[in-house]
Image 1: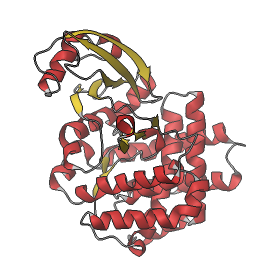
Image 2 (image 1 turned 120 degrees about the vertical axis):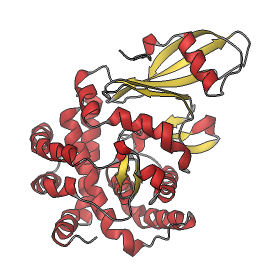
Image 3 (image 1 turned 135 degrees about the vertical axis):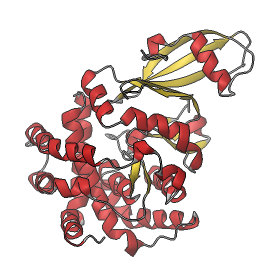
Length: 364
């Protein structure tokens, strides 16, 4: 039996008041009332905004955000298998303060021992707008995101307190299980999107499926923290009513790996080809400049192959997620959008060829 609320309706004034006081966000005032509404479109977790009243005006935050396990059993089971809830709670508890990235301040972070139930309570960033995978973004938004990628990757490069977190470690048993399940996911994806994804793009999915054991087993040099789902739906723009350009949320897929996985993922399935193609060189140069400015000298020629490989993370994520999270109309559109952009990047730069070369030589 968990000792924290498992869904928004279970949050009461006493629990919330205690968490705010423990985190220093509330003095001796009392929470006298709360109400909540659902927010976001997450498929692996449910998020709500709580509006609070106090026994004296302005004593604490007017609103806070809460995140909980998905009400859907399939999504919750997938999250437990992949340790998604455990990873996100660990990120906010242990790692967020070690990075330069803008993330929400956390008031509570708890997960049960089985990784099936969790709660996060954090500041309501009051964004001007949430990122939207289906609507795309401006080049200014893309620049802000690339700067945040470097703010994650540079401070975490070879950082022992970050790289040592047990739940972030590659798990051979789990990656083996995912590789075994992937052909099933590929079959579901192929049937669902037959006729919607262009044949040459579906061919990229087929080719990755044929190499999937090597893909999941890859180990790239220079490890650091990766977000793992670095795309528009997990970004808030104009936070604090426009005071800050961006914040990054949804850290359930955090892990140890190569930062170019996030960059290739974002440039492919994140922003799509219409924005990427004319601005690709600029954005990659910006990433290199930001990494170098943060103390990790980075040159384009050194990252190019890893960037090409990063595009395939978008392909595998779209395929696997389509089969193993709850199906929704928006989810179907989302995964098609992700696969389209990722496969187009992979075709533009022969990412499958880069993967074959890496698997043959071990160099990238």
